[in-house]
Length: 155
Image (cartoon, rainbow, N blue to C red; front, side, top):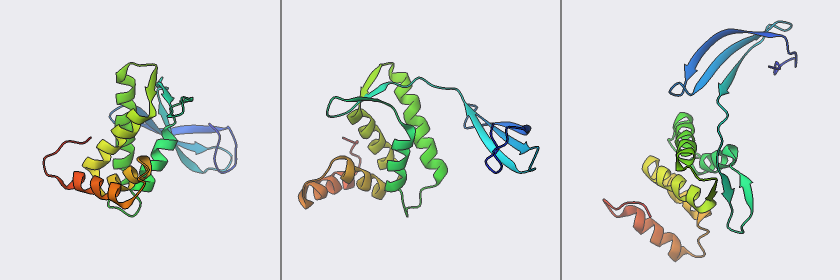
């Protein structure tokens, strides 16, 4: 592992522990040349399905892309970073469990919206407004009315 401070490959693990329900190993490392300490995370490389976009193009599932959208939706909201990471972890697990080689991007977007709806209503509306590309205020209001109906399940 390359030291992020001096770029040396000469370092040692000083502590290891399980993280995220045992699915990730957190390693604390110390660089021999510069004595800096840094943390790395090791996880099993999971085989996720290809994402089929609206225009028919296929691309590899990109955790960072989904994470970026969710973080943007949760900006300035009382949603912990750990909650967002957990949401993305759950999504990845669901995608693996589907057992399909290809999944439409719409499925991923709907799953994210469902999770955000439970987590934070404002973040849900923010994400939905970008994901669903509301054309006018009436579509936006319809979504808000849908959100405010008590006891109703997600779309």
